[in-house]
Length: 256
Ligand code: IPE
Ligand code: IPE
Ligand code: MG
Image (cartoon, rainbow, N blue to C red; front, side):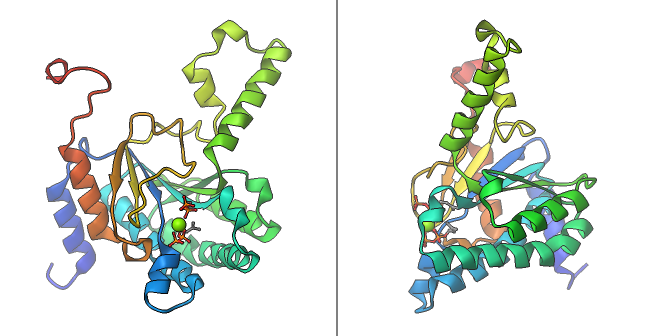
């Protein structure tokens, strides 16, 4: 079907990756919006607007490939310390984009969830988020999770408090605490571990993202700034992932 980009991309994807090679859970630290804008002599805030387009392209590319879980780091607990105008622009953009994307998410069978200290979000953002989560909850395609006001240390602290309360109230025995119980008390209790973690913009750090869940993730760092990330870049990251041998502590020989 020459002249129909969506179909061409689909055919290419199917040839390139087969389903059991695909990472089940991809997480992305979407970094570099501000620098991308500044490099072009623009205000940082323009970078966030451009970043929203990259979110749409990446989510839809992942959905086309059949990626089960995609988790995007959109705003960290530490990002609250940015200048007030930047924080409020980010929050307004969130509301606008959630509203704008609902129809496309429905069309593409994408289900939205969110993780983080969501109660800290402005009421407007929280309500919009709730609405899109509710309206997409029956979708069966890619499960898109937005990490908003998210910090892994906060998440782990909260899990420790919740487990501690259950021990105190004799709901859980201290001796029975294992990794499964810890998993069940994290925001990500409904998600499998991360298989592939991508960070854009050339920074090589984790910045308080999913510390527990990336224990055995494959890490992929690219110099591409987030607003320039697209389907092609996602495919590059997945190709790199597929070439790797995940040993989980075993030897190569044990795996064959
Ligand atoms: C990522 O881009 C978006 C958020 C953290 C909200 P940045 O805003 O961190 O962009 P840089 O890293 O300053 O270029
Ligand atoms: C990490 O990016 C958070 C998000 C992408 C939402 P930052 O830009 O906040 O990270 P640092 O401060 O450079 O580590
Ligand atoms: Mg940054």
